[in-house]
Image 1 (cartoon, rainbow, N blue to C red):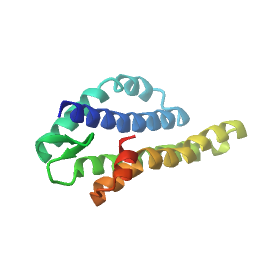
Image 2: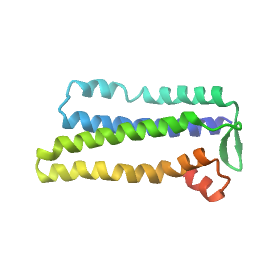
Image 3: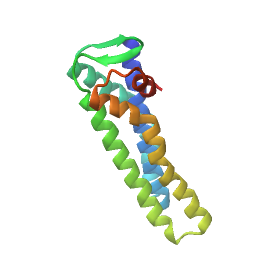
Length: 151
């Protein structure tokens, strides 16, 4: 169970860090320089926050079990992870779009850079977290989906 909780905490930290990066890019493009030191100071606390979220998941969903090498919450849908994935994706995408809108009057090279972030983020997110979200929502027993969700 410890490895399952560790995996869940690492996945949560990854999602939170992605949102942190998107917020940072928006702050730079909007020249919110006073927000950057605050943002810098919130990077390390993301990891204890991920551990706290995982502890809440364990408290809400019961014991974590590892079966066939996969993490399973005790017979319940993991609404905490579903909400976290959807919320962080939506927030990150909005921050990337805001940076893209802000960059529209910038030189083409700068616009291209922001466009790459804004356009590749959904692709990377769906490749990374899409299978996990499908697995959590459908509770599928497909071994292929389990492998895709775990990678």
